[in-house]
Every structure is written in structure tokens, then in C-alpha cells.
Amino acid sequence: MKKTLLTFLLTCLMLLPAFGKDTGRRSYVIGFYNLENLFDTYDDPAKNDQEFLPDGKNEWTEAKYAKKLHNMAKVIHAMKEDNGKWHTILGISEIENRLVIEDLVAEPAIAEANYQIVHYDGPDRRGVDVALLYKPEEFTLIESQSIPFSFEGTNVAITLTQAEQDYFRTRDILMVRGTIDGEMFAFYVTHLPSRIGGKGSDLRSLGAEIIYKDAMRLMQEYPGIKIAVMGDMNDDPFNESMEVWLHGRENLEDVGEEDFYNPFYRMLKDGYGTLCYQGVWSIFDQILVNYNLAKAPEGTLQLRRIVKDTYHGRVFKKPFMTTQKGQYKGYPFRTFSGGAFINGFSDHYPTYIVISK
Image (tube, rainbow, N blue to C red; front, side, top):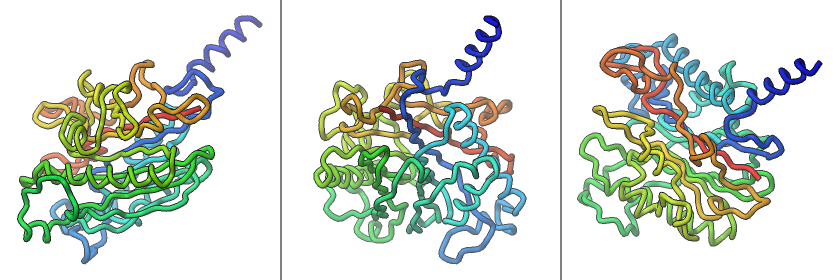
């Protein structure tokens, strides 16, 4: 009898979620995942989707699209298995439209999560948007807004000419406000301008400034509101956009009332990464939290340590998501390599944080 009881207790311990030993806490997972070009197979004249058509460069067929959906859902389900629960909030990027998101959340591997969608069609010239998935049982939506990427009123030294500014188009910034466990939250989902094509760091700094200004507005309008900014920043935590314009701080003790805490700053220094380029790892996929969440009083929702009780963030990386051989061994296992479809996942690993009372 004693042996049976001991076996049962050990099994229960093994099944505990990765982020907490205290099962009495109500915990919520907040994450971000760059899905790497989740396009459907239909021609949209308003989008630059020619590469992702059956007769396009990528020969993007229904079969390949189905595999891509399956693989994205597999990663989301794997995170649920590790944590013992679904994400309450999951920001996503590089999606073509609402249709592909609806197809994703209907995938058998994640359909039971009952994810609801917040998405706006944006002006990006490559035809990709950001969006937010949420569990309505845990997050009550109040409002959402698509914030345009604007050069007006900026304090950033912009290098583009006026003509270049007028032509420039990129992803809008998504703001979603609502409540979790009765507490007010706002989530920003962003995909800041790429480094490809000579785009300067000033554009990413501008995006960070836009987010920061709007976050300060919300903090004035709703005192005590807890805010998380997530996205593919196309910059590391130490870059100017994150440190200067988004006021991201490496150390929790240095976070002031108008600052953000960046849990992935220290993780990058310790060798973690979400993507790799020419052998150098970066963490572009970040989640920053404001003072009200980073230093929340006991008894309210606050940030928790989740990796070996050391880090406040996690880079989710599994062998099936990682290239196992060849030139890019150890890199994220992506959808295409050398122009060929290889049935991978994404060129980015997802990241997440956990909050609980």
C-alpha cells in the first residue's frame, strides 16, 4: 500500500507544470510566436502573396499549407503539454489574414483551447500582420486597436527622406485591453521593421517609441494597469529600440514606474536565443512587462520565475523544432531552406512568461 501511494505521489510530481510547484496558484501563460509566413493559397490582389501561390516561387499548395498549419499547432500543443495548460494570451506574427488564423485555431491539436482572435488587416507591403489569440474563459476582452506606424511627432532621428517616409509601409501595432482574474491588462503585439533591405535601426526605435507613448497613455488613464509588450522586435534587448525607446531594463531592481522589465536580456547574455544568423544567436522575440506587473504587490497577478527558478522568461525549444543535421544543424527548423520546402516549423522559437497570484 505504501509503495503504491509513493508511486502515485511521484507520478503527480512529474506531471506538475514546468512553471510552478505551487498548484494552489492561478497561473496564466502569456506568449509570442513568429509563425514564419503563414499564407493561404489564394491570390489576394491587395497583398504581396505571389510567392505563396500554387504557381508561385514557393509552389505553395494546399498540401503544404495543411502541413504548415499542423506544424504550428504542434508547437502550441507542445507548450501546453509542458506547462499543463494552454496559453491565456498568445501573440502571433507573419500571418497573412484572418482566414489563416481561423484555420490554425481549428487544427485538431489545439481546437479544444477555444482560442478567440483579435486581428486587423494592416498596410504591410509584404502582406503580413500580427494578431492575438486568447482564451475567453481566462481573458475578458474590453477593447482593441490597430495603431498605425506613423512618423508624426517622433523624437527619433529619422534617416528616411520625406518621400521615403510617405512610401514606407509596415505592420501596425496591435493593442488589446481586457481583464484577467478581475485585473486590468493591456497587451501590445508588434513586428518591428526588418533589418533586411538596409532598413535602419531608427525605424525600430520609432516603433518602440509609438508603443511606449501609448502604454504611458494607458497607465495614466487606468492607474495600476498591467502591460505586456510582445513581438518580433528585429532587435536584441540591448539595442537602442528596446533600451532607450521602450525603456527596457535588464534587472528587476532597476525598473522604475515608467520603465519596462525585459526578462530576456539576461537570458541572451546567458546564451539563450530564438533565432540564429551566421552562427550568432539573438533574442528578437521578446516580452517586456511594465512596473505594475514586474513589481506587483503580493496577492495580485505578478511575474513568476519559470526556468529552473532562475529566469522570468522562457525560450521554448524542442528537438523536433530544431534542425538535426547539415549546415544549419542546431538552428530552428524552418519551413523553407534554400528555396525548397522542408516541412519545418519556423525560423524563430516562441517565447513566453507566466503570471500568477
